[in-house]
Image 1: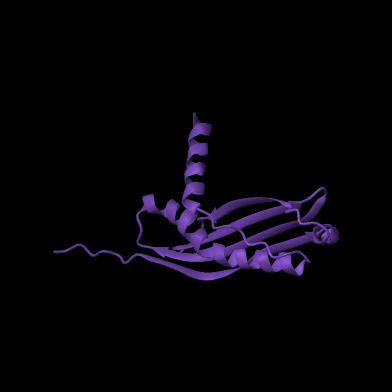
Image 2: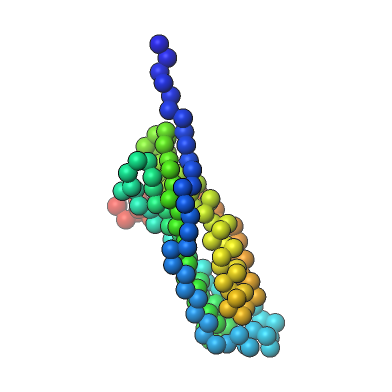
Length: 149
């Protein structure tokens, strides 16, 4: 008698802006008068809530962007969240799915929101480069193992 294999499912139930803040520090004209590219600092963090029941998980991309020339230009903070229905994967696969695949599915939407918010703030749109979430996950694992030593 063959063992019943559960189908693997990874679905986005809902995705949304949890929090968005754009602070224009009033120096838009400093970009217009020069061809110098501002210094852009992008920080990206992934928050996971595994406490959901019925195979639902909460994944949040937390992005903070600081743009500066001689003075700060703008600060953008975006928390973009998704709830995922995930079933049929081994426990060893769950962290890579939650920290790599789910953020990979959310990122294009967060990237678009960021570009639009920066543009509406009076600056040229900021298109974030694609993110390799597998590398971020690997770095996280390495930093955890170094902390434990």
